[in-house]
Length: 124
Image (cartoon, rainbow, N blue to C red):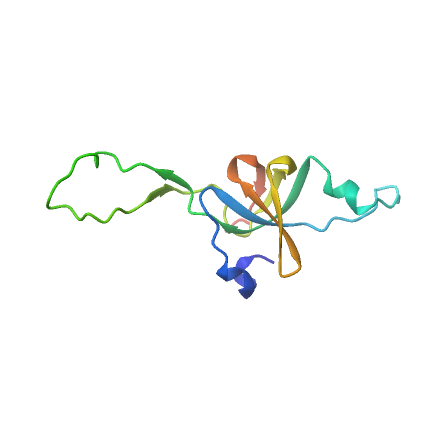
């Protein structure tokens, strides 16, 4: 159900500390059997879904590279602190921090890692 199984998602690149999440399609009725309109479940404060893709993480500065040394390669390489979440995790996140996007008729959320409250990960 996550990115490695879906070839159309492979072309997407997630930037920085953001995560692409495919929302779970929860039932549209309550435990007692009352049917809810789609707007009610979409306006919940907390949503859940599967992590499809992750960005490289938080960019960190290269320490000690403030001065110019002729023997060093002038090409600058970016360094990142990796994210805690992994592809395939089931994440619970704050809806108000998420950005809803549609890609190939599917609904996804782009969520910054700080808006993810908890993940469930398969034990390896």
